[in-house]
Image (tube, rainbow, N blue to C red; front, side, top):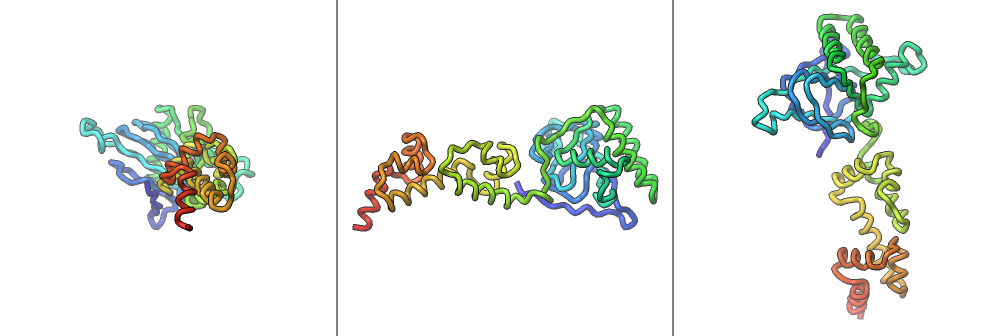
Amino acid sequence: MKILRRKIIHDIDRSFSIVTFSHLQYPLHYHDEYELILMTSGTGREYIGHAVGKFAQWDLTLIGKGVPHVHICDSMSDPSVKTESSCEVLYFPASLFPENMEVVEEYRPIHTLLKKSMSGIRFTDPDENRRIHADMKKIRKTTGIARVQVLLSILDKLSCSSRTRLVSPLPVSIEKENFADAVTRIQVYLKEAFRENLSLNDIAGKTGMNANAMCRLFKRETGQTVFHYLARIRIDNACRLLIDTGWPVSRLAWESGYANLSHFNRQFRQMTGQTPSEYKQSLTLKTA
């Protein structure tokens, strides 16, 4: 699924915005602003960072800058659902805050909150969320520095909330993570370490992602699974050794990362359509 970069346009005399959406249809995207989204009606599915979940009325979520996300209302996919999903969304940039706010005591709780938002934060107290909604509405009625004060008050209240959970198991941001670079790191590592007994966790550790997220990313970007790509590297190596050496098949398998000879023979046939012996014989016939 392609991830779009969305440009948030603020009013000419505003540095941050609050927007009401009567229905949700924007595709998977990210933007440079933090996003505080409150669902005022409806139900649906959500994709935030590496997590897939559901949303319902009065769910409140803080999403970090650069975090890919999308909300899909149930009424779009299920004709029996009559209630459209609507929401209030507050978009605000990091430039509103001092650069070193982690060392400013008064800002430290908000700094921690924004840092956690890179995993998405769900606030789970409906009554508290309704009060935050009332505060969000105040932003529409204020101007100048008073708008910033209302925003800071909202973030301060959220930083003190005890009923929260992280949405995504790991923080993710398009700003910090170039997907093409992540895939390249995986490919380079597999080419260097294919002789080792590799697990998904070993490979994922090279990208800073969890194993499931890494598998989804690799399949989406390359069209093949991680282990299929690894098998191709191993069998390509075995083919070269068949040409360049007179080693027995058992050693070819070992030198190509296979501890199990039957597994090697099976994958070799799947990749080449031949057994190792047939492959070598066909090369001999071609050069005769």
